[in-house]
Length: 217
Image (tube, rainbow, N blue to C red; front, side):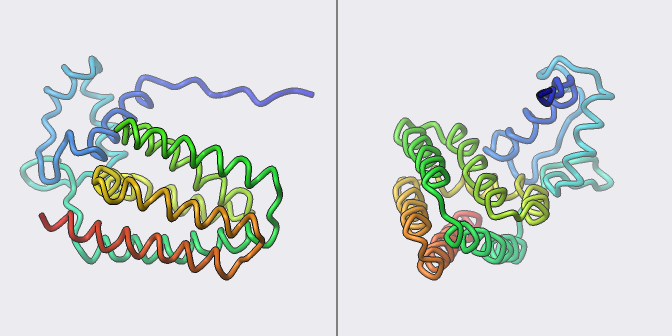
């Protein structure tokens, strides 16, 4: 059997990941102008690469263009509500499917991912917690057979990551978030789809309220 060959990252891919992360964690603040020359110097790449990255980030709605140039997009309250509403619809459906076809292997994988998220947050490494959160949700969607829904979610992941970093950086959410995910996993393990969906919606509703509050500060 031949195994799939992983595509090596290009210079643009690496630069794009760094720029996206800088926006997600607030190193590049909402409304901040993106100066191409400065970014070129910091990343050690050409202006062509930087421009390609900025155009890509515009397609993810992380960057906006105006007469004055490009800048980090500002998340508006209505946009935040819509993002969490879509999350609630898609994730609760994925959770329901997982609960209906729960297997010990799935539960073990989810539990391992959750432990990693807890450990990262306990160590204060929110960036690494974001990476494991991404993997946790990808596993949910793929196991549920909802690959198209995951593709849609991936298009929002830049903005979801911004909100998740804000909320998980607080002491309250760094504890309550993993606890809520544990409730979801426990109900998936029991095959209780209704309880799993309820726990999922509670998790997202709480995150939405905190995200709106933090974004207004």
